[in-house]
Image (cartoon, rainbow, N blue to C red; front, side):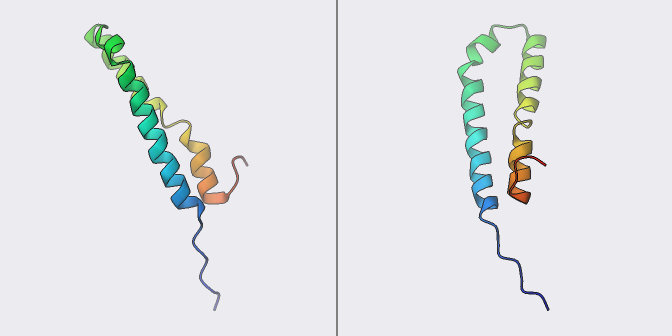
Length: 73
């Protein structure tokens, strides 16, 4: 019987980093809300869709690090 694996410290740290990143991203978007509201409704929709999707891209390497301990392959 093999001993159980020790929990990795990277996962809790990674979750905290993800939460911090989301908070910073939200603050950045909120700081630009007056500019965004000055746009027509269809442009606002495009901006908010873009900003709502693009924040996920930097999380890929962080998630990989949380699982493997490496930033790249």
